[in-house]
Image (tube, rainbow, N blue to C red; front, side, top):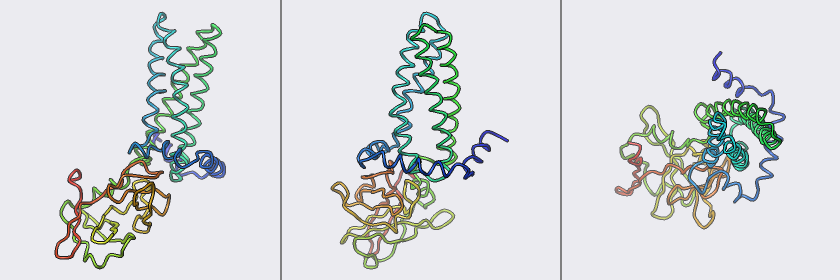
Length: 293
């Protein structure tokens, strides 16, 4: 069986769910207030923060591994290992925030990913301690062991992202199924005021649900699948969040600015796909943004 097949089996196995769930709740309780949680998710950035932060420990540790091969440069390798250890802390906090709001398969693999990262961090801390005591050979052995474990953990993280769609925009994936032409969503008068209504857009192979929100003569139309975990935005609510009218997902509470689609509250870090809208003889017409054409 391939490595990817093994990881899929881990994601499908409920063996450790009774341990994972209390940890998830503890993480959610610890990462408060909401502003802290949103910062760690990357809601302010428009992109998950965790993959940005991991560049510091990964880059530092890979560079240290190269410098350790050259005896005169080993003091610099020690500095880089220390930088990687320090950088691992905020990266792990951002990862924990995303993990706590992920679906069950991602949480299962994420627990393994976190355990491997913790082991790698421990090996690098041990390497620093050994180097500080003049035991350079042991320090290098521990560092290379840590690099190997971190590399294996990176493979797990890649599977979570690319095979399990952790951190990607589910809204963008759904939007690509829409045809690029104008879609007739029906009469303006049929839309309720101030709450989302389900409509369907013509897709390339199947109808694509969209959520239309009417505010007087203005209509904002979004792909109905929430960018976080594809929650049904047509079942959500319109609320004022941080000074903006937002469409709020009913599943995890992500709030998207009605005017721009940008997230105002996490856990989503990605914008919600918003369609262009025009009126024709009292009917609402919507079209996918040109970047998806």
